[in-house]
Length: 309
Image 1 (cartoon, helix red, strand yellow):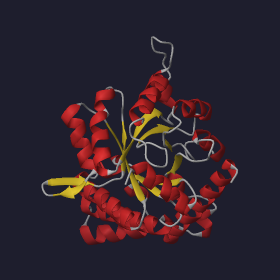
Image 2: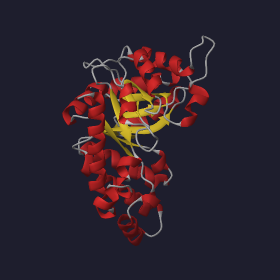
Image 3: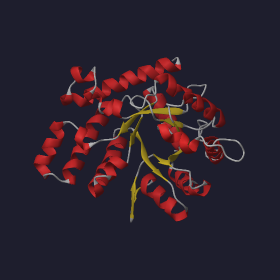
């Protein structure tokens, strides 16, 4: 089934476009988990990986029925070496088992066979001698050119997966390159947006959206509105909500007029909600899953209000 159709159906079923960012940091995990894993496995990367797996499973259990998508940031798994990659693979498997779509936030991008290998690694299931990690979608970096994206699209079409191309990211330094004017007078972000729209034209699902998505930060709502006009059929992955300063009103700038075509990511504000008020007092460390669920419900309500639903 086409990725955009699966995503659109999942959002409609759940009733909100929240994406839970699974960005675990060992030193911020509940001590009840980290201390137990160190007791079992010593001060090893296996202990850290097992702690991440236990943490993520609880978060997924707490949010799978109220958030259609999760997004593990691969860097937080890779820093634990091969044990971390095992935790990453287990997180994908468990989330999909619980009904969530998974976006692998790896920001890959390279030429030819290398891009194809990245695509196979993240966007296919393990089979025979291939050890695919089986994510539903992958974030990709377009700054080596159009030919670095095409191998991903071939895999997406064959396996029903999607990509999200970096267009206007949420970080403060995004303008260093993305806002620079080209020889035509257009900023680079607009040139990339046009490329994303063109690539997606042949990859529309039945819902009218394409499997070539765009990363457009909530921290730049005016640019998001302009980019939405350039990419009317593109699914926006909107980071920057919460800890980076983006609000629900900012985030909905990236939605289509029909209030579809976007998902909004929140990482720290959900997975570490138990460290923040009012959730710290209400739930505490022992019920970090309950805190994550409450934060997700609050975010969904804020987006619903901002969308006017």
